[in-house]
Length: 508
Image (tube, rainbow, N blue to C red; front, side, top):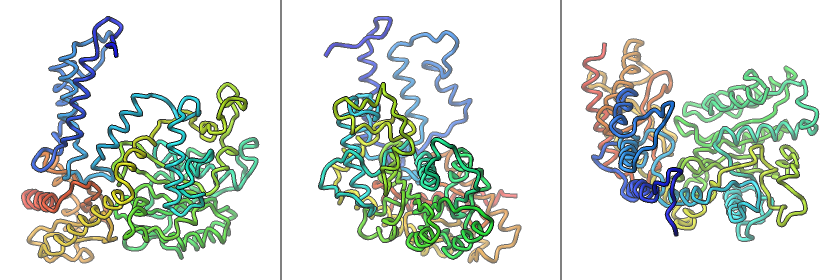
């Protein structure tokens, strides 16, 4: 294969190989143990870091730089980026990318096509169909079964993230309610969307973008751990009907962002059936529990949904992004989104019936199916189940350590899955009963968590999240990286305790 050159005639093959080698080394030998999770820097410090190679700004007349300078800049990118594969990165609901997924993503990028028509992405259309059929089967949606091979109309599509998938689902719900929506536009009757108080903020954004208005979103009460109260849902739906609002959709959450609570899907499905309401499951995080025989019960009732969104880039270690929207009636996609553009979706071309682009709003889509398909082939069902089981086992271990800490740590909620939510307690407040805190103590503890995290970032020892839970900033450990070991859990909790002790004494 001949060497590629840029417009000036300078060879770029050496540069390409050197940067690719940096990335590959990072994938096959990621940071761990005492390696920094982040070398945290201010914006000014980052600008200064790039100044020694190519500079960060491009400028009005950006010149080409030699290979050594560009490689140095790539090293700076690696040096200062957050190491999300590090087993002490427990900060986000994604972590521990699977190396097979990374190289699968590279392969898709190298082939650089779009999943819009079969003629430009024949392999990828079949891969996506096979994956959607398998995922739908795992979730209990009606399919011909994964052993039957790819089908022309798969039970859903891959989307660029859960928020876009929700937009699809709500528009499909509205189209089912109003079949002339596409041609006549939205009718004047007010609609309501129901989501739990702990549900994702994307519901409000979707309502605003679809012209429903944020007032259409009804937040339903939850239990102590963050799961939707089905009786509160019924009351809210009845109230909407009494106010002459049509219950358009209920968004049940399978794995809330903070506590990883699972809404009672069967009971919610019953309420939806009573009102003829679209039943959507936000399984962005927790749907991956379906892979594990020990944990799939958390999504009992998923088979009754009209739609479900599932982010495989979260618990399953796919690269950003890899989102599947599963549909009970995928034939609704064409009715809702098809435009029949005759320059692209010709009826007389070969295998045009496989084209997926006219069933989507986007038309061109990334081929996100490749990385998931390769990884699933490499890991198998058993490997996917093991990833989930390991995550829960590490969460259980951390809960055990917290329970045995003699009051140094106090759990605030416990859903028994992958999220561990707790407080670090200063010695002078032990034993602490969260419900008995004075306003002054609550305020000081609330302000302590950000200071602990800032120390963690400054030293690069770990990254964990914090957020208000029952009115006080609590730490949240998110377990999904298969490389996390008990010693990592111990180290992270030790860091929190050390920083906490040092910051508490200086806290006003």
